[in-house]
Length: 258
Image 1: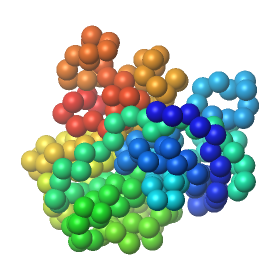
Image 2: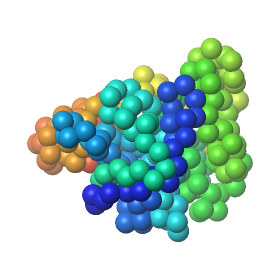
Image 3: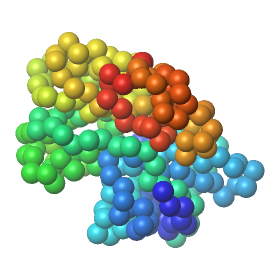
Image 4: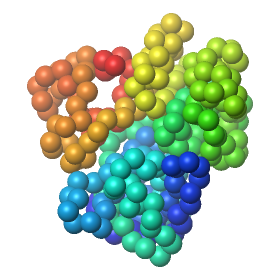
């Protein structure tokens, strides 16, 4: 992990409360990969704790990272007011990401768990998998976003809570509707979605790698504020807990209790 002051190259309002920020962070981009996140710090010195934001895209050649985030509090609202030319303090890359050990991956993203799937899809494409090999199932509330980016490197299937776009329901409903098959599910999204994916993977004899969303404090593994219940004893805490920030955020589904 490195802490740097990054230049903001672009800030864009995508839809509703979702924003996209591109930063120049060469030292971090060189080491980062799909499934990891960055800790972002506000300019407000009364807010000491960072905000963890998942990595959406990495351009190692240009030394840039794209972050797509939702405004949920004062910290992320402050991020949304930044513009090209501003600077932001960043720590990363943090955590363990996805293992690309599949030849028939199914990528599932829900809500703000959708953006990290772009970098993962790009990394599979870089390994030589075709668009038809990389199946992406996305679950939206109402409005879709980032779809053009996904369609460049993958075959996309959509669900939405209202049925306004794609299959009415969630990502599992879409997977069943389109009879999507593969050998490993890679997922990021809210816990109820991940719980359903864990069960679906078990039913269909597939592996699953899931990225957990938890409230974090320090974001570097020291405070134990973001522990999840694990199925094995953690070397750090000596109990059946794992720290989502540094032991994860990506786990194999059988490693954690949801």
